[in-house]
Structure formats: structure tokens, C-alpha cells
Image (cartoon, rainbow, N blue to C red; front, side, top):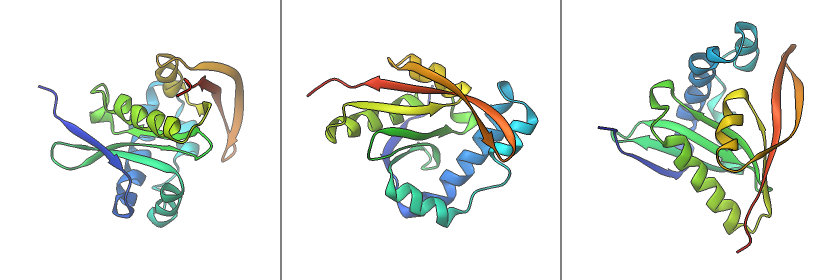
Length: 161
């Protein structure tokens, strides 16, 4: 039986959890598609919770809590419609959590009257977004702490309300 989870808006006390989820996701899920040097460059250390608390409050951010009340995933979008981050703990993958987080962000984008969503997607996120009607607009290689990492620049046109 798949445990239940709830998606809710980010709150300040969630900052440490989102930092840990980011770090662990990169380090534990990332090896399937990235080289060790890329993972080290992407997440060299656990992020500062206060910095990320401020960042998450500026963005449209949602978290997912499992049935034990532990935060296991999160997503953030700029108010202009750029899906900036989407991370889940390794043990929370393939349970529909990322999908429900995405639904919350797309609903928020529609509520804001945005015409489209954009993202700079990792190798993991690219296939996730494609399944939801996104297209790859271009590919780019970015310098991440001195290490090149490829990603897809993607977008999705949203329906008019």
C-alpha cells in the first residue's frame, strides 16, 4: 500500500527540510544520470536554510508531507512562471509526489494568469516535463562551480481560462 501524502504551501520552518531534500536528491538520485564530479559541483554541501527560506518565500513553493508528517518533496516556481526546483527524496520517488507537486504549481500559474511555464530541466526533470506536455526549446551547458552540466531549456503553453 502506498503511503498517503499531502501537498501544502511552504512555510518558514520547512527551510531545513527543503535543503536536505535538495542535497540528498542530488546525491542519492543523481548518480543514475550524472558523473560524481557533476554531483559534487551541483550540491557540494547542504545549503544554508536561512538563505533558502528567504528564497522559497519569494517563490511560489509547495512541499509534500508523507503520512508521518515528514516533508519528502518540494517544488518552486517564480511568479513569472519558471519552475525553478523540483526535488523528492529517493525513498519518495515513484509514488506520485512529484506529479502532485507539479499540479499545485501549474494550478498556481493558471491562477496567476500566466500564459506559459518555463524550466531549465535536468536529465531527470526533462522526461518528467515531457510527459506533461512540455517541449524542449533548446539545450545548453552551464558552468556549475567549474563543472559543465547539460540541461534542457523547456516550456509549456498553458490553456487560457
